[in-house]
Image (cartoon, rainbow, N blue to C red):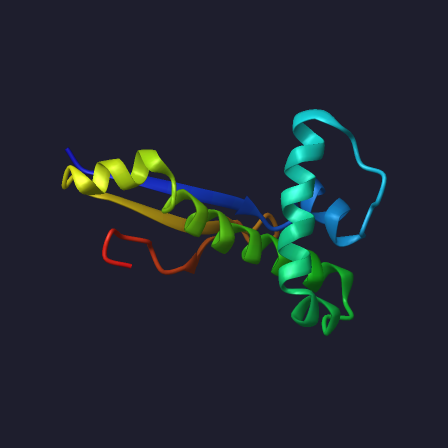
Length: 115
């Protein structure tokens, strides 16, 4: 059996929009934890993000960068690493669904056990 893992984002994600707007007072709990990770991605790519003057372009790019980071994170989990050690074919992919044109766009190269 061949396994594939996908990490999706949407081009107009409300969480990404909130993080891009640098909301300091976001909810606690699971949603707050998720927004923390988005803000961390923003901080990692702050120089690139700050060069984008258009808020829509900034939100779209942050969504893409979040998917890239999450694909890398999935490839580091013990579950995925274990599957690779057992020679199970598992390939995480990162795609963003664009709500404006209805297209599903591959954002980064798939991750494999040889990466």
